[in-house]
Length: 53
Image (cartoon, rainbow, N blue to C red; front, side):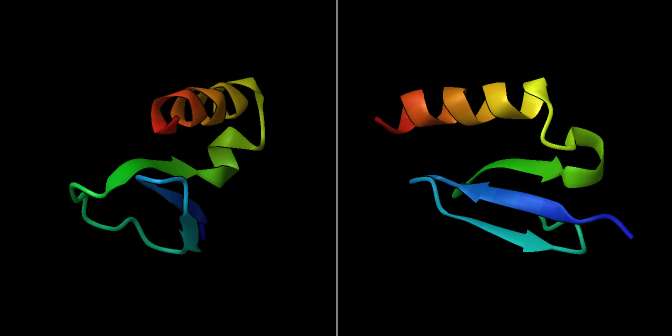
């Protein structure tokens, strides 16, 4: 079973075992099994941090 990190506008996030429906307050849904904390995921976090500022 995969775990997904749901990143909301403002920088908060939750983790869930199902893919939620996309809403206007969600910036990204990341499958952590695929991201595995790798470079692409880290770049996404940096990008979202810039947008949030």
